Image 1 (cartoon, one colour):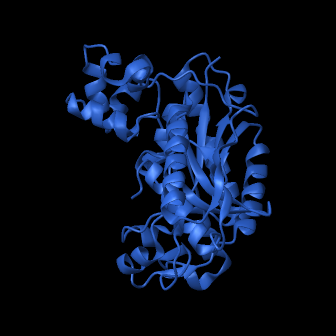
Image 2: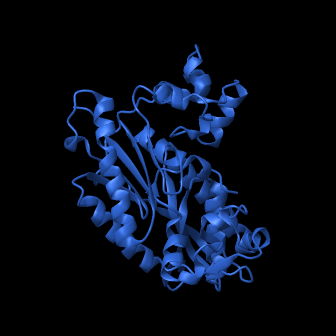
Length: 357
């Protein structure tokens, strides 16, 4: 049976919800996060703000400098979660098998609805359903979504990234190799900063270079080489994951002696961020939520977290947000017995999100 996979990605989700709920924000450069006058970070940005270079995880003061007319709005996570629930309910009503990747993103397997012997005939037959889904979300939720359509997860994700916002892109089996050729190697799932640098040093900058490379890619990227080669030709047999996927990654350290020494705590947090980042990249995932955990000498335990619209993978970003949470919440007000750092709300990062800062 031919496979037909949709990748659905809501457009600037947090900011779009704010613009919809407050008509005065329509068309404005909306920045969801702490005001520029306060110590904080950007959780999301509208497309109008992104034109000025504003991105998730950026310090609010930097966003304010880049976009002086930006309208800062405090995040309302409960509101976004409820909106996500209603959107995913609409998606499920289509009859698709759904793997929700994050609050605003999902894979849909609609293969059972389009049982055509020819793969590209099945893909083209699914386009009316994709248009209907987009229209239902627009009419019932007053938000726009972008959908990529292809025969596997790799290509469906690239298709949705290709044209945003409010896009609909089909990558057929016949056209996939040519579609991939001009794209940078970083666009492929699993290619992070380190892998990208190794490929660039070997003169491999585009996916076309990978397709044409006669050597063994394992010499450059280790055991990922054969998979990377298959990905470069648009081949991906990964199934949708429907419940057994990893939910979170965390690290904790209990100190031999309670401490509030800033250097000790920073070194601890940095090591934890490095470990978490390595584990994320090994699984080729990004994290939308960063959490810190502290325990004091009397065993009082507190946790604080921040959720971003774009997924993080880099240790520097995770570390900086951990420091931000400790400072913003004044958690090191007395010596700590334990310090922990964790990430959750895991999904595949977009290519342009792999290194935000």
